[in-house]
Length: 390
Image (cartoon, rainbow, N blue to C red; front, side, top):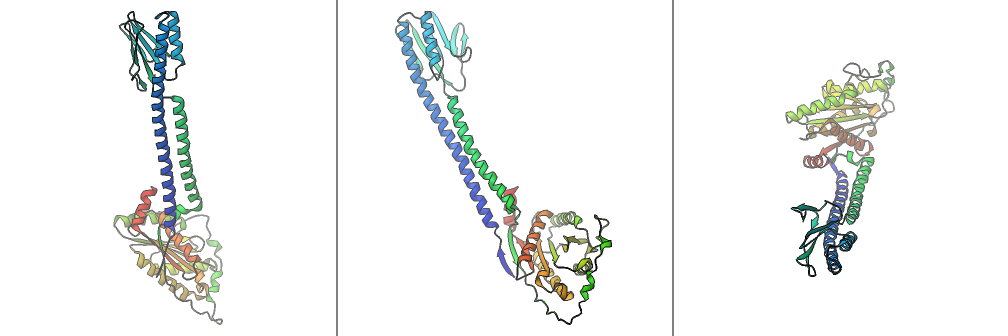
């Protein structure tokens, strides 16, 4: 047997590269956002200290003309409102405390007729205390907001844009893989089985298979009725998946293997010929209940308890039997193609096993050297694939 590795590794590498790029984009977005927020807070504290120093100078200058008179209060109120970072001022003197606040009740509370700053997250009064020398026992202190919300808005907007770029990249990559069908590609390798040489056809040979061209229109049904299809006398195609799922569950619970063989007869001469080929398959595989129609001219065979190597051997022997029985109908290699796969100790459903067997059959139809191809899975790689795609 000749082995050929699938191209799934290339697809995995491409997906890993895109995933790594997206992770880098997300990390860059978070790092730049964190750094910019830190620098914004640091700059805000510097600004607050500068503005407090300026307001303290104004308080000293205004106090020369009258401490806490109407003009003084208005001057300090205007100075506070013109600052970007300061939220409130408290000026204390011999006659008590005086509060100046941008938003009443936001950061100042009164305790025994004395103003106090409220402890809140996002506010600081660090290094914002200064005595007023021209007023007896007077001093000024302030509280500032450490967050510049306009700057925060810009930072968060830029961070969100970078993250959305990463999401867009991953989304379109996933969409492209779905459109190209790459996610449906099974993970494993293809085994190319040896097929016997085709018998030489004699011109004088009686073509007894020609009588099989008679159509069986009276057997056509609009849907499944009964256990077997009258066209082939094997199971209806619609019953295949339920039976395969059932057999997979039973084999996995008893730790037995299971193989699925897909057989396709190309250029077949009518329903009668297909029925004869189906009967040969029943006689060879011995269980009519596990054979089902597949497409127009195909048969799917479920083999519980059969491993990969034995399934290939059975496929080769069935191929030999058919071309010897019907040399004029299946003498050409392209007229009979077989693809197969097996459970191989994996926990999988009927859909996955069908995908693998169909891929093998597709390759068998396109290969000029052999008509039998088997899909061989790698259980470790399959488990890794399931973990990363669940």
